[in-house]
Image: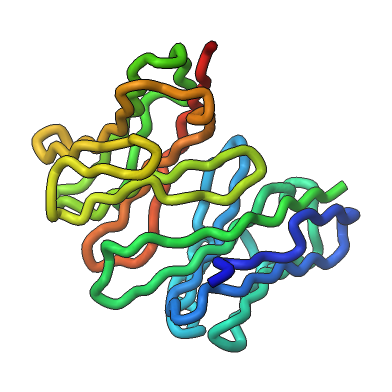
Length: 116
Length: 113
């Protein structure tokens, strides 16, 4: 398996523009997580899905952020409009869930977002 | 809420010296615990995990961690540091009955020649 695949790896955009980050989880994984990493706040969980359904979006900073998972092999995180404070590395991760809470989450390489 | 604390945002050791990275969790019920490593411009990679099968857990690259319930700790160690160990290390916790992983703030490990 190729692992969790994120695109793009780098994104530079101007303030006010819409940004869409993409993620393909590992096949067979039923949980998908979006994390944001910054120097100030570390790794923050933004939202996670189970079987394509959003379960907990309490970490989403504000209404400018939205996430979807239209099918088991694809998810997007959208920021509209983007602001400089959204600059961060965004990670997608997937795992097998259910009773197997001992299983780890597998991370993608991340998307480094810079909003100027 | 479940949380995890990593003592020391930066740790520096000499090559060949012992590595000790500290992690404490807050929970009355032992959770599932994980250590991840992040190399520059990379994603997070699992080093090892505690699943209640054994208190001493061995991971990749010579790392190991010991779960101590009385101290609510899960410290990461390696007997002899190598230059390639320079990276950022994250402790993470998953509470029983929950799915999300909560991460500590991370510890940046520097290896001096």
